[in-house]
Image (cartoon, rainbow, N blue to C red):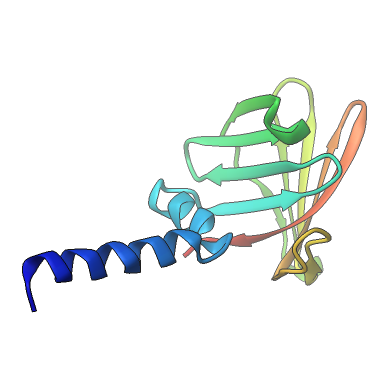
Length: 130
């Protein structure tokens, strides 16, 4: 097999991986050191928690981006619930060990996520990135 053909096949494999699914986004987050990631719809939002570094919340389809310093969560093991209180605005991030299905993609997740801010509440799904 020629080097050119091998390179073409490698490029085709990479394109298939890049086009594969939303999981590629999750893998890239993991490579950046993100320990937990969640998404929600209407309006579209995402949450990325990087242990010891930051809690990143992107809302309104990417228009609002808020980075909070990482805070240790309160873990309620018997309730299968983890709560972060982020920033001076008192944003509450609650991760519950309840299966969840994304309303847009139909993808299933291990946990449900609720984010409570002063003026709204966001619902979505997430997973730990190992």
